[in-house]
Length: 285
View (cartoon, rainbow, N blue to C red):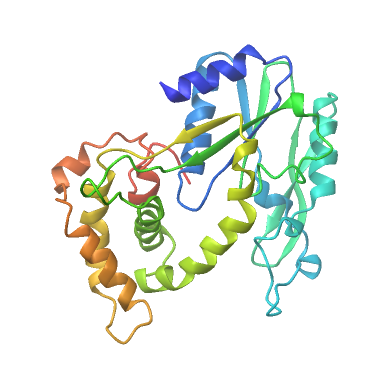
């Protein structure tokens, strides 16, 4: 119903809104949200066109570096802001543009061969950590934009004094997804997590108030489901690992939750946002 409500808001202003921007912290379900919203827009007669924000990365030699001299891919200046604004405005003016394609292996951008033109029923959808930062789309009229902030705000508490951390829920999502689809074990995910959170406080949270609407992707059954997948991964972390204390804390937290079984997990709809993390989704990622 929430997807439908967002779709209806966009449809009501379809003559003006041509760019839907979706941002949110790590593992908040941004990708599934963009795909579900695109499906909803098709249902009500619009033609959604998904544009990859990551394809607007600058070439590696122009990528900014952090204080330690490493490439800072989370900086907004790692994106070609000028090209993004230029192409979006060209599309809004009825011109045809060829979208870029960034090669992450080689570290440079090149023409994709994908030429598009925006018609009266077309809506561009773009998701990424900087989507709500006004600097990213500074040259695009606000009337053209519809901004969505996606998060996973838990609605459960352990008891009357202890609520369940939204950040812990997202960390468990990421541990499961990284293990299933990115070849990254739970130890590596936990070690990287503080850096991810720092990036969120710098690049995402300050701009959440710019959103026209907030989408909460948390599902009431997901913590029992995440326990099923995450607990074995956490138990593999060695006591000598720097991630071990955090794994113990998460295992203690999960001990308060009764996991669901494999038959119940099989009953989770293939369009559910949690399928982004456990697999079996209707959508491709």
